[in-house]
Image 1: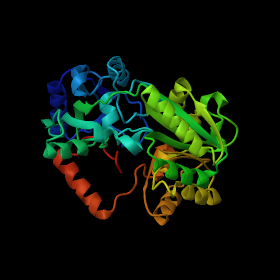
Image 2: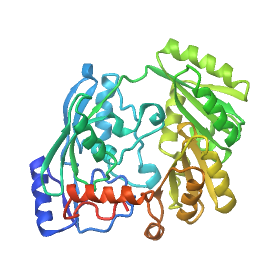
Image 3: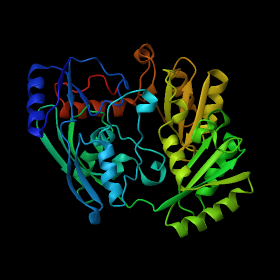
Length: 399
């Protein structure tokens, strides 16, 4: 297989124009840390953004950063940490779950719209994205958006690129918001609530003026995998509070008092709290070295536990909940059971199920992405035709 590693945007454009002229497909990747994800068709050539590196512009006072797409996420996070800032959407590292290697890139984060536990209050990766530069399927260099939240037309195109998984173009540069990093954090652990009780408790506590930035429920089957088994006995409902030290302390006291009426309460200090939420973010319970199918399901927070309860009756399933119960991480025992999963989701009011991990054989018969309604699918096809008229980018990736 040919691997192209352009060092400049113009070089990338020339490679794409050549392949478009010949109608030759290109697999578009960053660090390839999500290798195997999706239903991509095998290609003979790979176009990698890792040669396009470096921070282009960063003024902490503006809380905006512009970075070339191939820049490692670790480099971006280090630069932000020096200035006390962060990526609010808390991007997941897929390597443990998917057993992949390589280095995650900032372009890959936005191309896949990767978002973590803070998503339910801070938005997804696309919500922080202000501008992009990319090369479309004609080999044309396109710029959209900018460094301020005013260009509405540009923002629409920017959001279109986020989550397109390299099917519309090769991202070469991204500009995004970088808010202040909280000075400290604390997590309240409530023990002994079942899935339904935890969903109700999280819904109730989110209505309190406590600015909770993380809300997850860890059933018995997964609780022991976090913090090397140091969480208290019983199911764990975990609630994160971030901010200035004095504010965090006061709000944590109020939260502990409110939740103490529901179960036993334990408080995790900053170091353990940060580690716990990284492990929740990176799906530690299912980073088990197997290829057992793992689903990422987004539904209304009130029905996540109902979905899992229904599936437990008809299929072997293990699960835990993030985003106040609206994000369900599910591991199946053997087959993905895609039709069953999506049928139950539809019956409970709708949502999205994405198959993140499975064997090649299972992927061949199960759509990785939630099937689109006919009207949306038609619109998506028209957008794809405009951006990539010959269809050379990541063929089959989004089907």
